[in-house]
Length: 272
Ligand SMILES: N[C@@H](CCC[C@H](N)C(=O)O)C(=O)O
Image (tube, rainbow, N blue to C red; front, side, top):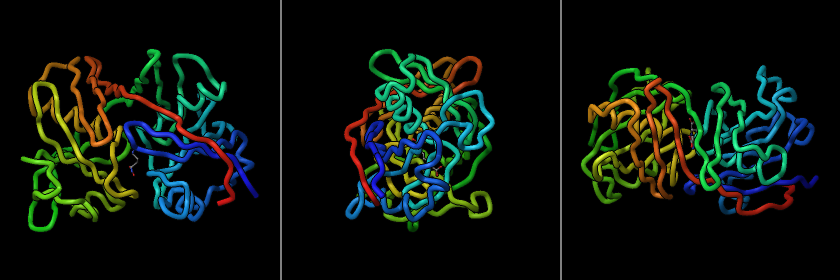
């Protein structure tokens, strides 16, 4: 049976969107279907799936009307997706489901409020949890890393270079991690300073592989960079990702705000 899909991205972190207001189209949305949709050769292609479902239909206890049911490309379920929230809000806007400039959506990591300035979306990711030091590795190289939760787990490592021909490499496999700390995997960000209040990162996402951007990862990186620089609360850092540019503000109140673009690029029907 054919069903509707859309394709969108935020700084080239790309998603297949599945409108399913009442949950009647996709039921439990099994992992096989997610993998088929995200397959870049035999499917539509994406780093993940965003099912757009009413919170009530998804059994989510929230005052937010819509629930972002996010799945990684390998079919696994993750708590949050920062870039996904912006694309989700842009879809609500374009579809007419919610055209306001301030939208709260439900996620597995709680409700997230987004604001639209006419060009970009800012999502309040909530408070970062700084959980101490760990380490990550690629082949023979290991780096100290900051264990940070943005609702989902991150390990942020400052490195000398992001060059794929250098020690960080091509990130074809998940970096080595502390398996006891991250039994279900972790999103690993490699970061360099490129200027004042300006960093660049590459990321290997849990359940996906290397992606062109990760919004919660950029939030974790921004916070880690501000801590390492001793930056004042209220600072905003530019975080460059392979797919574009994001901005991260760590407010006086300790909330992490992520600003960046979101676009819906295609729509159609599929029976995948
Ligand atoms: N790309 C996302 C993060 C998606 C979830 C992640 N792979 C995980 O498993 O935690 C983002 O923009 O935050």
